[in-house]
Length: 229
Image (cartoon, one colour):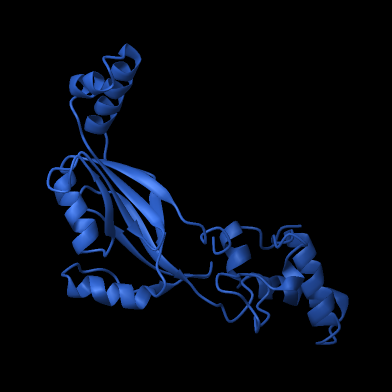
């Protein structure tokens, strides 16, 4: 997560009340209204930006009206009718959570709280983010976050003295592409490199100690690989 969450995103949300939604993102969450069509007072579409990340808002339209705007294109009309039925039948954004990066999640959280929005306190996660979840007025889910420096490798527990923000693993636990090595490789390295060479344990006891140690690490606990052969 920490390695892929660095890149800006651009999304579009369809809503029942675009004017209300635009105002909420601007006045509560701190986005800047960059563009609106036909205007900011009665927007059918708007683009709001926060630190280079774009959230576009689209007003829900009657399918016939939308088809006419597309030059009475039958294909466009059918497409809009399908979107309209899906919107009416489903909860907003089920299964989707959009991540928005901010320079300082604690400062952003304090500002939002002052504007009247009550949110959970920022929380550090083992994947290198300090984050706050929220839902917008129509139920779309967001996660606002800041990359953080982790004190220890989330695979083997080794200190990460020179880690970059969002870095989860040490160089011993990653390959040349920065990806986490397989369980067997990390287990062997922990067994031999730490418990045999540094702790002077015999092979059998070293491997058992390595398994018990890795069982406490977020990388392997979450993947359900601890104890596998």
